[in-house]
Length: 286
Image (cartoon, rainbow, N blue to C red; front, side, top):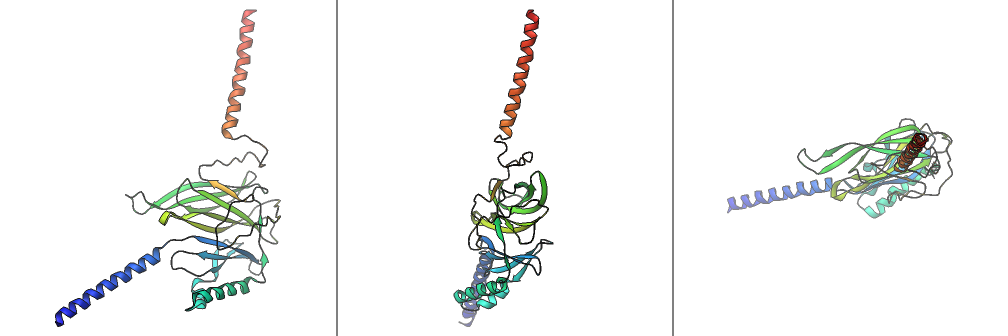
């Protein structure tokens, strides 16, 4: 009986251990969207602060992050661990404490306001770089890498890497004016970035400089950290196969696309050949 009890105990211990590992693995790899929003500017460190709300991984509470306008470096102002310490054993009341702490930190900062990308002739061209698969023999893509190139008029002013899942997905961008900066904005990218379980929205902030004649009129489009960016008249929605027309500096100056322009050129050539041929026959008849 002693031996039987020992065997039962060992078997039970192994099963419990395996279940624990399995549960831990599942929790560590669970997917979810990542939203950012509630942008403010701190002149003391020339950084834009925002709330990073990730619903994947370990399930962090809202995190206060900041991006340096000088270097583009992102760092935590209130980390996940600090937020978890505030929450303690009471999640509902703890989340309120985290929000209060974030509000107290940013309360004296300046507002960062939404601006219109089309009115500022700011365009983004997204180009595919490469894809990562779960293994070389599999068709399952876990992440695709793209390069986003930012233009104002026909001049490239910035570029940054961005991740996605496939070449058919849309990439949505929004711009935000920073008080005191006439040539620099922050650009929000919003797209499917987590490819697990069908894909989840992923949002990031980028610094874009070298801009001229910015129209910083507030569009009134507030960005929350609890939902994704909704396309509107002030945003840009880009697909990787799109071709960015840089020869046209205005948004409405030409109603023709590349295909239409090619057709017009061919018509002009055909008309020219017709005129020349007609003159040749006329001279021959004379």
